[in-house]
Length: 358
Image (tube, rainbow, N blue to C red; front, side, top):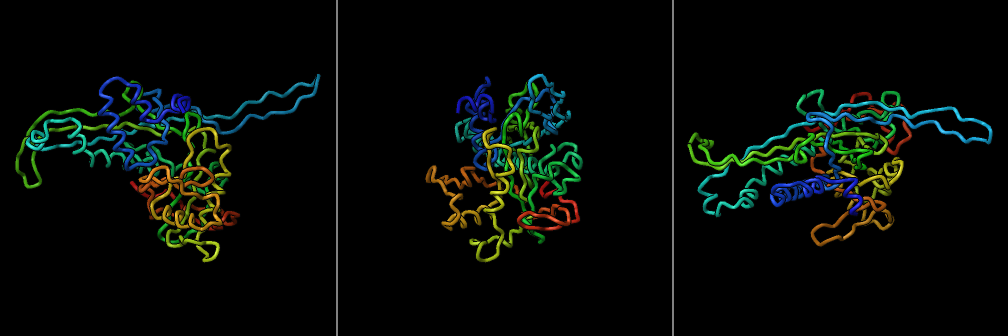
């Protein structure tokens, strides 16, 4: 585990190695993790720039051949492309009544607990950006996963091979994502020279205004989180799209509902290997409820509910954890697929699907 944390560090791993107030930093990350199950999986790498990260992504593997004695080999090389991924800047400003802080002993950790709503909001905002962010519609946003995996037609995008059609056509569509986090596949970035992109600044006391226009002395704290998302190898991300939440049932083999187990199996088998990084499925609460109900069906031997602790049972498929991500909306646009598909759902589409969220 130590080797993995060194070569494939999370945000908590990076912050733990920095100087400064580690206790406050660790508390902030713990608060973020409580409402963001994706965060402990996300690989965090320092960018090679302040506002963007330039990386070489692999678009194809080199040609290799068997060789006989006295026969040469034709030279070949892998196909790559250089991509710039921007870093988004997220900020929040907290203001606490000075008198309230005084009553609680001016404790920095107490102020942090009072700021928990702001920290949670930032964590949820980043989670939505990772899934749905589109820097084409909002310059300040990062480019998330949904705009990158927005078609099931391999003629339009090579990574369409990793988009699976669940067959839904209704108005309550969502997705399940299978992500492999590592420096070679998918990772987040922070500005070069920063403290992992996280900062909090005590603004001291100043006069502020309440909702009714009244004045009072407050203690201000500014929180900043600068983060980017880099996809180096599209083969290690799989999207199960067009899941109709109204067709989720406990026993799809008998009642005709969406067969989530088969979809998870198909997604898992699209990954080149399962040993490259931290791998997890991500779905919203409704999908997770359906999966947990299907877990009660003993025929689904690959789906298990591991009681890691009393408070945190972990649902797994083939040993891969299935995490709840509330940012995954049930209002996604339908991802289009070619007229003839061989997937589980067999759905057809003719409109662009860019996901939901902000």
